Structures are given as structure tokens and as C-alpha cells.
Amino acid sequence: MNRRSFLTRTSTAALAASLTPALSKLSAATATTPAAAGATYPFAVSPLAYDFAALEPHLDAATMKLHHGKHHAAYVTNLNAALKDHPKLHGQTVEQLLRQRETLPAALQPVVRNHGGGHLNHEFFWQIMRPVGTAGAGGQPGEKLAAAITAEFGSFEKFREAFNAASLRVFGSGWSFVIVDHATKKLKITTAPNQDGELYQTDRTCLLACDVWEHAYYLNYQNRRADYLKAWWNVVAWDIVTRRFAA
Ligand code: MN
Image (tube, rainbow, N blue to C red):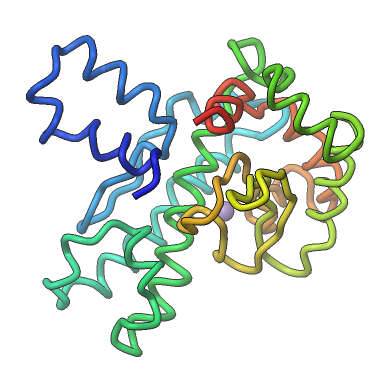
């Protein structure tokens, strides 16, 4: 068990009972995992921590409302429907389901990959954004993360250029990520098609993810993915990303 999944588990009721309320609250707050981490069937979309309009003008309210309330919700509905008749799997988290995907019944495998992956990616995506003007949003990474970015990419600006370029190269629908590889301790920009991703992998920590499906930007930016990416940096919650790096 890595430290983060340990933290996640320790923030659940089992251990919370033995902690003072203040400490219990603190460990939940510092876990910096998706809000639904540790959740099992039936899965649910976590409420946003901000209003649909809070990320404007960068991400418009109509897109946020559809994206969270329809697209993300559909992944969860489909995942739950497929798991309904598999009670033996009802104790599994979405990360666990994704990790053991190839051992699942054949009909479940694509559902877990696409809809389970979609649920996990979106839970994370909502969490690493916050309104401009609030602490941590659109600013700069913390000192140690900034140093790691400079060491790997030359500068913060070059890092963002590399991330945007990788995000633009995703053909069709997919995601771009920033991870720390546990073996090399290095930062790496990766991409994945559809709803594949980095969040359930145990040999790396995912720091950042950007949804580059057209549904994430088309209402406001139409075909201009580059403009969406440029705007998206304004709402990245760097304090949360920095905490994930330090964890
Ligand atoms: Mn999406």
C-alpha cells in the first residue's frame, strides 16, 4: 500500500473513530486524493467544490454543467448498471476495479475501462481546478515542485508549452497528465486515449490531468483546443498539485 492510499484509508470511519474530530478532519484534508477515493459501489459523482460559473471566463458554466452533470454522471450510471449483478465486486474501489480489469468477466472489462476510468479521471479533474482569485489557483507551483519542473523541462513556461503540445497531439478524445515516476523520481508528461489514465497506477503519482475530449471545451472554444488549454492554466489549483507532489 503506498502512502497516499494509506492516508485515504486512514481518513475513513475505521480510524476516524479513534482520532479526535480535529485530527480526523485534518487527515482528510491533507490526503489530497479525489473526494470519492475509497468509495465503492454504488458510485456517485462528487459535488463540485465551486459553482458551475466559478471557472469563467476560462471554463464556461454551460460546459461545466453538462460536463459534470451529464457526461461524468453517465459514466457513473453505466458503471453502476454493469456492476449491479456482480455483488462480489461491490466492495472494490474504482481504482481496484481498474487494476484487476483483465481478471473481470469479459463483458465488464470495457465498462470498467471506459466508464470506471471516466469516473476516476473526472473526480480528479474537478479537484485540481479552482476559481481564479482563490488561493492556489492559476498561480505557480510550490518551491520544490517548481525546482523539479525547472530541472526536467528548463522552466515553468517550457513545461507548460510541452504539456500543451502533448495535449494537442492527443488524436480524438483523451487526457494529458503530469506524473512522478516512483522509480526515477522524475516528472513526466503523458497522454492517454479515451478514459485511460494514470490515476490507478501504483508505480507513479499523478499530479495533474487535463481533459481534452471535445465535450470539455467545444461549446466555448469549438475546435480551438489550443485556446482551451491556454485558458485552463488559469484555473489549475497549484496548491493541491504541490501537495500531491510532496505526499
Ligand atoms: Mn470529460
